[in-house]
Every structure is written in C-alpha cells, then in structure tokens.
Image 1 (cartoon, rainbow, N blue to C red):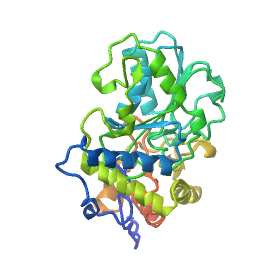
Image 2 (image 1 turned 180 degrees about the vertical axis):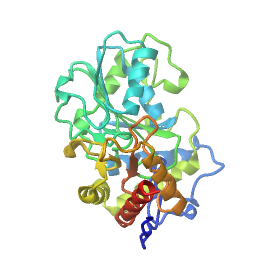
Image 3 (image 1 turned 180 degrees about the horizontal axis):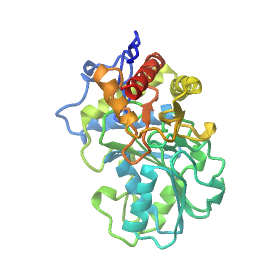
Length: 378
C-alpha cells in the first residue's frame, strides 16, 4: 500500500552538495553591480577582488598574517597548486577516508611520484588513526569528508610546534566549521559550497610557514603557469591582492561578495556555524526515531554538519532503494540531487550548509519516510 504524501513541502528543494543552495532571498537582480565587460585588471576590478579577499578574512576569521588568494579551477585547483608547489621537501603523510582525499593520494603517489609518502586511511564512515600522523612530515588531509559525512572533530592531533606543513582541503568545512588556523598552513575551499556561490573559482590561504617553504624550496618538476606562486624565488604577492593568475568571472565574483555580505549581516562565522548545526541536528533527531535510516559516519563527534550522509540501517537491504527514492523525491519536486556520491556506499547525501533553511530540512524529513515506504512497498 502506497503511503499518503506529506502535506508540507520544502520551500526550497535544493539540497545538492555542490553547487549548493543560494543564500535565502537570493535573486539575480542582486548582481546588478557586477563589473561586466570590465577588465579584472582595472583599478575598479582590482578593488572588487580585494573587497572579496577582505570580506573573506573578516567573515572566516583568517589571521592577519595569513595570505588569501583567488585561484582558478575551484577547490581542486587550489589543492593542486599546493601539492605541486610545496611537496617534496620532506616526507608526507596522506590521510584518506573518502573520495576526494583518495584523489589527492593518487596525485601525490602516481603523478608527483614521491618516494616518501605514507598513506593513513580508513573506510567510508570512519576516520583514520590520527595518532599515527607524524607532524614532522608534511600532512595532506580533508577537514570534512564531503562524500562520507565524516570530519575531523578538531585539530588537537596536529602539533603546534610541527616541522612539516599541514595542507587542508576545507571546501565543505569553511564557513560552517571552526577551522583552527594556528594548526593549518594551507587551507583551500571553493565558492560553491557553504556560501552557495558559483563554481570554477578556488581560494588558497597560506600561513607564514607555507610562504617560507615556497620561497626556500624549488620542486624538482616543472610547474605549469596556472600553478606558479613564485618568481625568482619570491612569492608573487599580487595573487593575494586580487591580481589573479587567470581571468576570473566578475559575475561570479559579485555573487561571492554578496554572499559574504549576507554572512556578515547574519553575524559572521558563528552565525553560519549555528545555521549548519541546526540543520544537521534536525536530521540527527529524525535518524534517532527512524527504523530504516542511519548515519554513514560511525562516531557522532565526527559527523559532518554540512554534507550529512545517510545509509540504510539494514545491511541486507537492496542497494537500489536509495536511488529509487532519489528519483521519487526529485519527481515530486521536494529534493534535488541528494543521492550518495558515485564512489560512496549506497545512500543519501543531504547538504545542510548555512544557506539551507532548517524549516526546509524539517519539511523534507517526512518525505524521506514517504519515499522509503513507497519504494519498499512497490
């Protein structure tokens, strides 16, 4: 018997994990000030790019002595710039517990072909043994595993007096989780995650220690222009003043600036974290009551508050059930793009970042039950 459909629907059914929902009340009309048809190298263009960097520092609470740059190719481009420019000076520990972390392992081991690279990994739903990390080596890790819903609970496992650099892919954590910058030397993210910006632009944040490495170490491999952060052994400072390596989209830039201004108007970083926490808490409370859904992340302290990943509680349940549910929910117009990542275990992935309204999450939950019951009873 097919269950009755819930009466209420999410006002915004966009729960994609990237690109993510735009900020509440967003309209393309808000981008009317975008510098379309103007050079990003003009005085006004540079000022607008610098405005985005200044707002990033303010909202994300980046230390004054850290540099912030806008780089091409989204978070992927930012991470690749760091890997190709900084690694090789010492051994490196690579942490992987989901798809993107495993991708960085592939690049370091198979592309850069570093001999002294240790892999410390765990399966989906778990964290690797963080106590095994040697901070006298460089460390590459994701703060929040977007495809597994597992994040590091804090940075307590990173030595304050480390000799190596920490390179942190923070794309689904920035603006929703409390990044401990004192423990991080390279931080990367993209505009299209927590603030709901547009794709293709990445952010690269460097500590003074990372800058020192860039100016004192030359990798033994050639670097494409798009990765170069130094010239003549000195940092190209313009990258961190809005003088981007390649041409940015001024429309996307304006969208990012407006998202940052929205975040600032809410109350800044803590307000953004509070919104994401409320969204993920709504799902957690529902999971506690559910007889068919469970978190993919095993430890509650390690569960993401942005990319919430769910699995079927019954390990013997048919793997195609979540895919059928996803199609039903999209057909009903109540949830778009909530299927598990292609490399992850079968399940659902619901974005709970700060641009999502808790009322929409709460309205979605009865629809999850409806989709499950409809699927298993068909």
